[in-house]
Length: 408
Picture 1 (tube, rainbow, N blue to C red):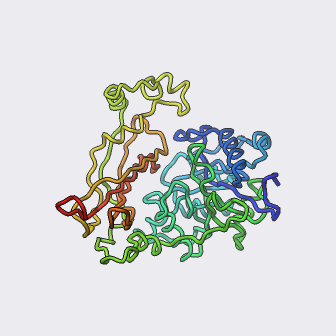
Picture 2 (picture 1 turned 90 degrees about the horizontal axis):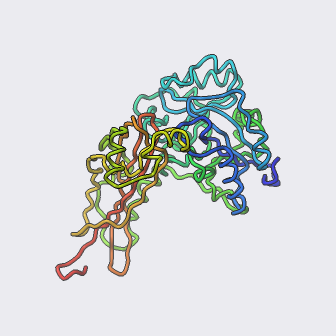
Picture 3 (picture 1 turned 120 degrees about the vertical axis):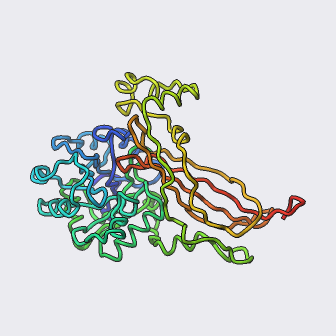
């Protein structure tokens, strides 16, 4: 038991982390993650350790135990595989399991992966279950896949939206599937956003597999803020709770807000961007960008943290995108932008094909000194050809009623 574990023997682990040791889209080292753990502990949060789950790669002889001990933490290992229902985490990887699969393939049968993991003494988990295309919910809704082989799912993922996590949670509850929480971190600062709380000490992969195979399921997904002493684990939101709550009707006592509720939370494809070395060069020249990670292939390969040339995140702005879904808000006579937010998650590389998907994230009302306002938040998700979200942007638009004299 680490010094930071609770007196009741509970353990808080982040079960989905990628590092520069094995994932080419990661920017965090294992030691960097351990230093982040120390920093969050000083702020009063609980992180007892994490599991490194590299994409399509597992090195049997890799051992982080000595490094982890220096930081009084637990570092476990698994692998993230790609299957016909999306990504799957596997823990307790044995030689027999590795003999059965070519980890580099992206078309494994999910049923085979879950079944073989269990038969060889390990366990499989459906990763980011509610995320479009690379999570199991889409495949269940569109193809009615058999959920019987799936015993566990990651339904609280630090890289997924609240709506996506709610989709996974709803299906898990309805199907009797155990739920886990993880950050899906590729960079140090994302570690621990979401974790799993176990009610017993976890010191090894064997401990982890034993508790994940326990039908009593002595574990629960948690967010980082729920790990502080005295914090309560919040009840998980369902899809039904999230979508209606975005309108916040009745708060202001005015007329009922009219808009198309059917589009809220539903993604549509709006465009694609092919990234090449030449397009990166042209973009950097236009902006007079001189960062060698973007402009010097030799430096980026030999000295950079990603092992190759990458693109400035702003290159996404060059994509020609269609408009987002229209909520058809029936309020006001003027519209203006109230703010925007960008989150860049993974590096963009030459050869990437980036697809953009847009949605109306939420519609809500507020009142201020100028009166009633209706906010529409548009969310755009940028995904590469590997199914990894490289960036997410949000833009808030305000609808107001303004009279000819400039007031309401």
